[in-house]
Length: 377
Image 1 (cartoon, rainbow, N blue to C red):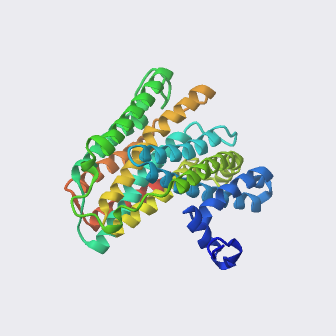
Image 2 (cartoon, one colour):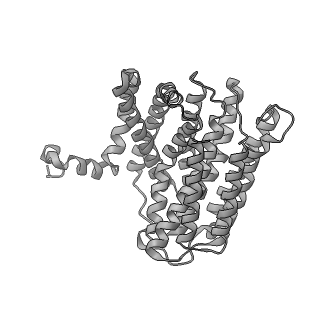
């Protein structure tokens, strides 16, 4: 028996490194999904303030672990299926959080899906893109990217945003900022079609639109994981998703009531959900921008925005129709103003194929205005 085969020969301080070598996955990504199931089994979210805080931390860890494992599986299967694996995993997390709160009785959550999708769009278009442009510009000065790919993504995103969040305010078949059943089904179908068409264009038909002009860095194409690592990640991904859905259901009422009791608008719940789901991709986009890979940053950001609408809206629409839940999609005048400003500004910022820190500063200011007017409406 060799030293590598003798498990007892591995010193305690090397356990984490040994597990990483055997599975190809970090220890935290394996631990949080199991902790999530354990927290659900013992009802951790119901054990007072300490239990709620602990369950929240585990929920965040399980979300990050799920996205990490989805990325591993996506890297192994390659495109275009890899993009769909990651998008579906993130959508399951987002929809589970939204539906859990929609089913709670702590307040009127009929607009929660709208608030979450709108928050995701504002976070991506202004927060993530602004941070990437600023960070990349500070380190590298002027950065370049392929204009055709970004223009394609923005054209699809604009159509999907207007159909999902603006048009409901102006139809007359249903009262308020809502769609009639037939209209909701139509918008859900066309949103899904637009997203799948974009994935086809991005990964197959016109893949070159989304590749940088300059030579890619040496670390741009990492070796795909082994089959064993991919299958381990897939199994752990399923465990993570189960834990996230059940933990979200247990925490939904507590979180919503805490926000309402603090006198804060319910729209903040949507900001929290969107920020939590987008955290891993935000970090990846930021790191890519600092390594002068702005094209990768924009692909991550705009791809996330398209998946948020193209997959989340149809999923929430199906759940709403099956469970007969009210669903208000239309945003108000303040939201429409910020949305138009964001789409107009990002079209100008990314309209030349070159960016500087000024564009980043402008988008971050718009994002700050969105957050401030959400807290102080």
